[in-house]
Length: 268
Image: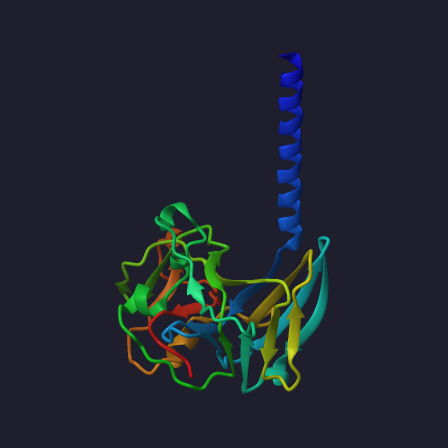
């Protein structure tokens, strides 16, 4: 009986070790590209086959794409494209030979999951409940043909929107849109449209970070950045501007310079 118990214990240890090793291999085999969006840009979901990010041509804002390779906890900048290098460019971000289209992550209950994409501000669905139609005069356009969009960096406080003395019913925290693309063995993420293709290959134990920014300088005066979105749409609507709920007054408005979603419109 004692020998049987020892044998069972030995087998349990072997199985536990095998599972642990398998999980370690799987973790090491993961290669992920995480794309963050910051600053004035309109991410349009009206085309079911691709998502397009239109970077607004806003005064004193400078577009930038910063690409980092992350290995063993260390980050290394491998590409930094900014300013005139991006002016009037049309970029494509894709994984060749992959058939999957970009999707949005929706959980059963967004109130219990702060990565639910619905935390991101959708100007059309959250504020106006209709399609606004975007003008095609962006500084840069970036098409994404794969990946999962979700929310990150939820604001600490809630926001409402006001147009003059009119108060919108919107009253909640706001998340920042983020895109995740997982690469499988022998796959590459390819960014084209800059003259020379940028390739991010699958590598064991390697992840990539891409920051797509359109921000003003840090010392820029306080202006209502959000108004640039209304200059980018064709439909005339009340200019609802964001204000933190806890302030109880409508002015002065805070600096809000975040990427926004257009869930109904598309960008060619």
